Length: 382
Image 1 (cartoon, helix red, strand yellow):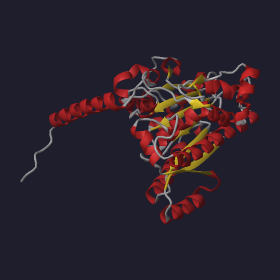
Image 2 (tube, helix red, strand yellow):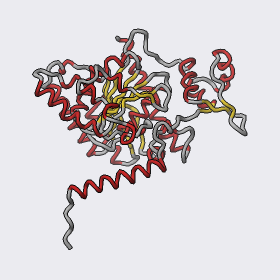
Image 3 (cartoon, rainbow, N blue to C red):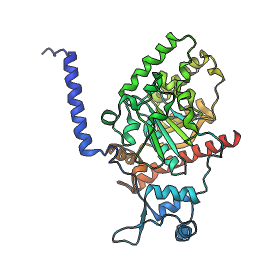
C-alpha cells in the first residue's frame, strides 16, 4: 500500500492540532505565569540555607527582626515564603556578595546538543543563586523558550516578539532593559524567548553584510551591559547549537558552563563544539583577546555504569582542570519535576523518594556554591 505524500497543508493542520493539544495539556497540568508559585521553607530548611544551627532560629529572628514564619495549621512547625527565606539568607547567611561599585557577572550555559540538561541546569542555578542572596537575571536565547516556560511564562501564549531581545537586535531599543520581566520567583527576573527569536539567525548576518565591519558577535554583550549594574548574576541559556546568538552569548560571558553527560556521542559533540568555537573566534577581530574568569564542564545525567566511568576518564583527559568536580545524576526526581515544568528547587518537599531528591539536589547545591565562589574570586580581582 503506497503511503500518502505529506503536503504543506497537511503540516499546517498538524501544527494546529499539536498546538491545540499542547494548550489543553498545559491548561490541565501546567501552571504558567502568574499561577506558578514559589516553594515554602521549613525552619530547618532556613537554618540549612543560612548555615546556622536550627536552635538559633528563634534568637536570630528576634535579634535581626527577621520574618518569623507562619504557623502551619494543625502543627507546631512554621513555614516561610521564598521572600522570607531570601531575607534570612541576605541578613545572616554570610555568603559572598557583590562589592559596591562592582558590576554583575555573566555566565553562558552552552552545548552543541540538546537533551544534556542545559536549560534545567541554567534555571536551577538561577534559583539556587537567589537562595545564596544574589539578584539574578536569566536571559533565554533559545527559540524553543524552555527556560521561559520553566520560569512560569508560556512562550506561545505570553511572549510577543517585542518581549524578547529582537527589538534591540533590530535597533528599536538602546539596550535590553525594556525586555526584563519579573517572575514568580523572588529576586529572579528574566528576558523571555519565543520562536520569533530564530529571526536573529538571519538579522545578525544581514547586518554584518550591510554594515562593513559590524561586530555581530558583540550585540548581546552591548545589550546586556547596563543590566550588570542592576543584577549580581546574569545567566544566559543558549540553543543547542553554535548559532549566531550562542556565539554572542559566549562572547558576552565572563564564565562558561557546559553541561555534558559522560556519553561517547555527547563527548564527541562537545569536542567538536569547542573546536568550531575556537576557529570562529580566531577569525573575529578583537575577539581573540577575549578571556574568561572560568570555563567549567559539568557531568550531567550521570549513570552508575562502566560506560559512564570510561567516558568520564576520557573527558578528564581532554578537559583537565576545566572538569568540574560536581556530578549531577540521572534521576527520577529530576524527571518528576520536569514533567510538571519545575526544577528541584520548585519543590517545597520531595515529590517521591526523599533519597532520590537528596541525591539530585546536593550536587546542584555544590554547583551553585562553585559559581558563587567563582564570582567572589572574580570580584576580588576586579
